[in-house]
Amino acid sequence: MVYTVTDARRPLSEDIGYRERRYLLTMGVRALCFLLSIIFAVTLHGAWRWLAIVALLGAVLLPYVAVIFANGGREPDSASRFTPYEPNTVDRKEISGPRDEIGS
Image 1 (cartoon, rainbow, N blue to C red):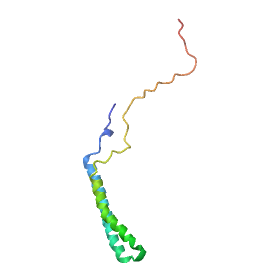
Image 2: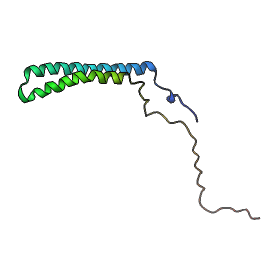
Image 3: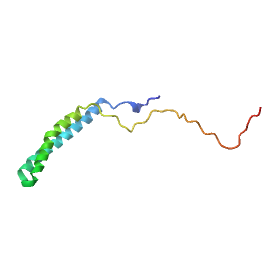
Image 4: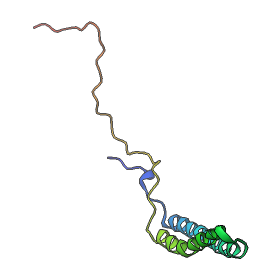
């Protein structure tokens, strides 16, 4: 089997950068949920108060999710890589038509 350069894993620095960006994005959504929970709790009354509770639950649960994904290990490699070269072992079909036979 022949290995190509595409079989190499992504650099660790690239993987860490990806996980850091995903963590920061998740924590940004958490901060937004926290602010929305405060705004909804102050402005909404009656049956719409559940929006404040849902936003607060998001603010409480998202840090756990963000840490799990950030520390989960290296991301799997891209599935769009080239496959290793393997020669075609299928026999070729012979050309149809008259055949010369060697008589004995």
